[in-house]
Length: 332
Image (cartoon, rainbow, N blue to C red):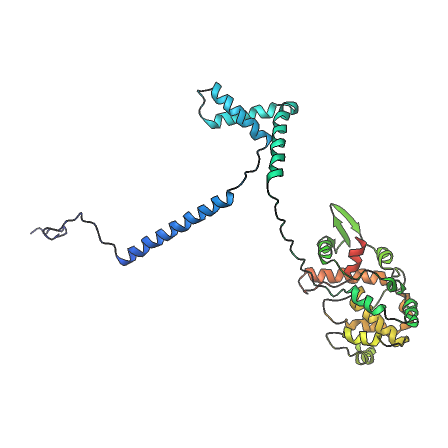
């Protein structure tokens, strides 16, 4: 017995009648319609954005239009625009400058008309330089202007008399950032426009007025040697408060206590600032013998610290840039 495996349609049923879409099919259709509307809207936006006075053509375009028109008329058997454009390109390559001058002049005239009639373009706003630094020459200037005659003489005796004439109060952060990007910490040089400008302690002496000869500055040693100084200047593990030093410098005294406070302050705010807000407690080791302060090579110390701080910043070890950025700004 042979069984019929073909499907059994009901009598009278029309197998070619249209199918009724399901709910899921309706959702797909609606989604396609919405996508089509979005595409159509984006095309309209693009057309609207492209509307306006077109930019003038160059001399080559002026020549090719004229050449292709004549070529198509004299070569009706040629197969389309591609052949004519190739012929125009070959002809343009062998033309002399004098022969091209006709089209160059035409393009320049059209360009001049375009510039005179086109609306002025609004300049794009410049991005603000994202530079964080504790180097603050303005803060130091505000303190220096209140010094007495005796205090100024004390500053000169330490070898920092040039700072009393400091006039630059602000850092141009965009310029400093630009210079930092071109500062080679390995070669200790600025690399600008293909030229390498080496930086030496003598350059620091010329720019900042600090001595570039003498003993190397050593700001390290046993903690017990500076234990009393740490207590005297309220030094924590983070450092010494800048405000605390400003209060000390506001007093009329001009002896060793004044010199110590000034040295810490000028190192922490201008010459060798770190990435932190406070002054590095390592500078306390410099205060153990105040009679030798003027014998140190402060120019070399400033340059060494600048290289160290910029290197740490590039390695991602600190968010702010330490070192005397004023030296980079003024030297450039």
